[in-house]
Amino acid sequence: MLYYLGQYLQTIWGPARLLNSYAVLITFALYLGFFLAYKLIPKFYNWLPHDRGREFTIKENADAAKGKPTGAGSVFITLFVLIVFLICPMNWYRSAVVVLTWLTMLTGFLDDCSTTSWGEYLKGALDLAISVVTAFVLYFGLKQLSPDGLVKFWIPFHAGQVVVNPIVYIVITTIMLWASINTTNCTDGVDGLSSSLVLIALITLGILFYFILGHKDISAYLLLPHLSTGAAWGIMAFTMAGLVMGYLWHNAFPSKCLMGDAGSRALGYFIGVCVMVSGNPFIIFATSSIIFINGGMGLLKVALLRFFKIKIFENIRFPLHDHMRKNRGWSPTQVLLKFMIMQLLVTSAVLGIFLKIR
Image (tube, rainbow, N blue to C red; front, side):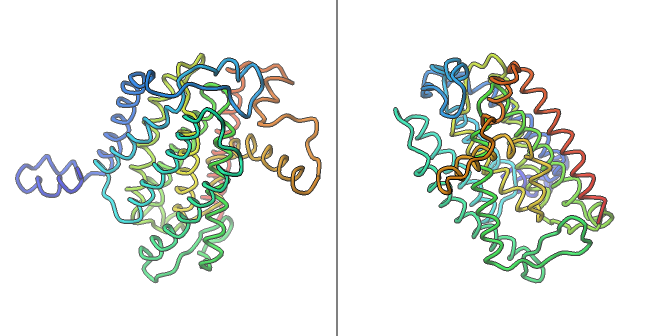
């Protein structure tokens, strides 16, 4: 809305053209997101459900979380929707992604409000349904955006682009989104951990969209495809980053509130969407390697045991942050800082390799 308002007002008042500057809009969205989340989340403490003890965690963590306001993700994801529609220039498929992000939050929030957990299969089925719908939305949105009507990937160690078959794209996107939702959800077990790792992912994606893929000269220099809507996706990524910062202010150890499934599932979904929009699914290694290892290996361990009776990692507790706390004696602060350091190291290395070795 502000972007289009700026186009109209600049004919009357020159400085209004700043509302057409993506750099200004990104800065405004980041700070507005932080301020609103910081101020508004505490005002909902009495309205939010209270944690019943975390499902995937050691007993000490569950006891520490029990009784705290949870589902704070419902507040900052709703703010995300409002800010994005206020600030960011929108098209139909970005609007659809924003609505689907909110719906993903809603499924998690209803589970947070439930007196008993919805169960793994119901939540997994809902995640799958949302992921499939989103895969179709992204495919047709990117197909419409493409000059030749083809959806392509740029992949590591290859200078050109690879045309992606529609069915292959739908399958890859569905798997990506489902995995991102569930691994991010499993990582939300130590105060500040999931939100800090997500923040690294969001800032990485925001930089990638605005400064690299969305910039004609830089993308051409790096032999990367130019994403004409990169700046708009950058606004969305930095908006979410600002909101996560505002939430993290209250979730830092010892936390006063929890994002719940409402927050973790929606954040995982949004990261997965951004990775697919970037045109390179392998970017997930730059954004979420530690999240996928921390939560994903546990999901793999359970799936292999339950469906194929195959036992792996018998002596390792998952999510991995629980193993580090229970078996290695790490404190919550040590888990947070060490996991963040590992992710920053991986992010720097992967981006350097993917962007320069073409």
